[in-house]
Length: 283
Length: 303
Image 1 (tube, rainbow over the protein chains, first blue to last red):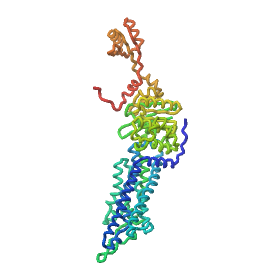
Image 2 (cartoon, one colour; image 1 turned 180 degrees about the horizontal axis):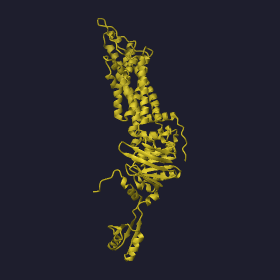
Image 3 (tube, chains in turn red, cyan; image 1 turned 120 degrees about the vertical axis):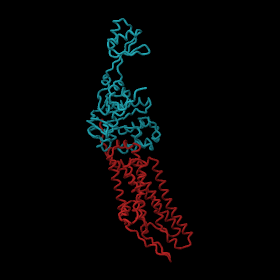
Image 4 (cartoon, rainbow over the protein chains, first blue to last red; image 1 turned 60 degrees about the vertical axis):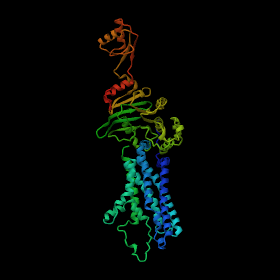
């Protein structure tokens, strides 16, 4: 009785993680609910602005609305980020809290490969999920704005960049969730940490009094995303008889290049943390 | 073949496994016995690379388990039936494991059939009884048709039919030339299953020998005697240095004398004997006797 040497193919591990992800009902539920809430918030924002324009007596009201904002509502995409982060986190801590991790590592002793296979599956799924939600949000909001002839096309300046940033937010947050899941290995703790790191922490590093405080904030995921979804072409119209609103410019802003670097750096750091932590810790 | 050499695991204060060395050979069922907390599970986890030893080595067919890229074709293991995700169906759970090791889909149906879970294949594991989870764990171990199999307390939660089935399975796997290593804290489970025994207590090796030799190690030889003249015989035997315990049914248990000597004494003093039976100490007693000094969690005196 001798064991035939298994051909260790990485794609077998990717296929296995794919099966594991989609054989849990919660995956479908969480993603579907997250997408609906996110698209619902953005579409509703556009709808209420259209109603505002219709009610307003001033012809300037229409020009005062930046149509890009509704397509990338901060609240909507914070929920999307938390949903993505949770799904990523569950993929790791779900194995630890259930004990499945011991079965997994008995089947595949190459732990780093297991985590990398999870990273591949999670990234692919989240790029698709984020892309879908971002495309739906952009398409729906701009279609609604089209009634008032202020809807943007995807070829408008900054529009595709904004849609891409919103789409890529999902995989970045999911990978951060995976890293936190690997470090904390506890369900509630991981979700709280994900909300803290992704959504709450940037709030602590705002204000322009100290440059270093702002710079730390700039290195976080949501401020980077906010810079990427800003409409570069939008000008607040000047109301006759009032001072020009365009005076105050942001100090120490995140540049577009810096923002993309922040996205990439968080993703890479998250993968490194997830792989090394799972590899070293006893199970 | 499993080789464990000077294996030691120390946690901050406790030494869970202490310089343990033994070999588990193919073609036999080897029982791994010890009281609760003796270090059985820690040892099995170190063999499977889940726990890093403080010192010493454990190899399976010559290689460290963690150095293998994929495990199922080399070693099948059931460590804890609860090491599954309750949200998946039995077949999805097994299919993901099979796929990760490049095993074909049909293996899933084959092992589910083999452990008698074919009808529950599509049900969520969360709704399984402990016995069903044990069967699923055994199915997982069999998935890669491996030459080495490890089972940690596999009998827990199985119904009597399941216990018989599992014993038969272990014997068949060994007969096919595989290495079968089964842990338990109950000696009685091993009595009809194991060929070899490895007994540990407080992380140390107590015995590693064939089951029959182990049973013979017990120092307690008892003889059951039945006589109408119990009082006279008891006095006689006690005078010869034996210990006599009388039973309610008129019989008594004698330790310290052989059946032949008891017969001689009774014959010399014209005492009628109805029964003289030598009781070979059970495995359970041999086990209790050997591990008595090394029980980690001992209950208080009986009230």
